[in-house]
Image 1 (tube, rainbow, N blue to C red):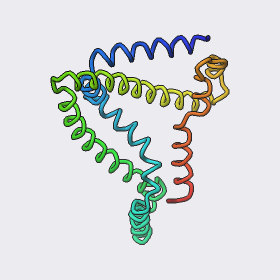
Image 2 (cartoon, helix red, strand yellow):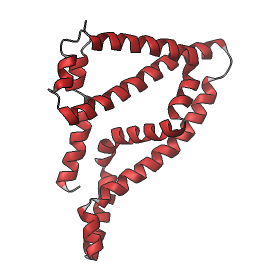
Image 3 (tube, rainbow, N blue to C red):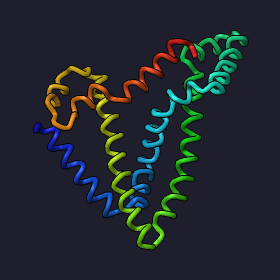
Image 4 (cartoon, helix red, strand yellow):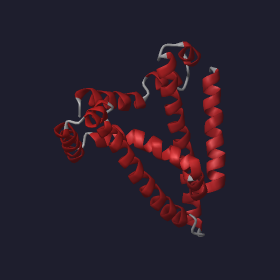
Length: 192
């Protein structure tokens, strides 16, 4: 076992203890409260951006928007097209929708999960562990992707992960977020 494996086991143990101790409702409020909630919304938007961007009605709306800017022909419209204002506007709209849905869903779920009866308390503790673990995994994937952008997937950081018993090195090189980024990059190159 290498250091990364020990860190993984310690993190999983902490998620188990803290998630069960606080329960789903409190973990959910912690993760989605204040600045963490905005950061979480950005992460959710990042996950959803490439998926929702490929929806037919979204493509139609973005095409109409860019066509209207092209038809105007003014220098400001050309400037906006050059900075891909269509993708920026789409990202902002997606963020607003996610923020609204996040607040509504969190309030409903947190109140339901804190009902004081034994089956709900057990479910609350189990889901607290699952939610906290999922949150830590998402943060790890985002951190791995940022590190991969900086040093590459075969750089100095990767050498510290090589030989992981639990496959941390494979998670770093085969990070699912890389596919999302490539989808966004391909959509931007194709001109939407």
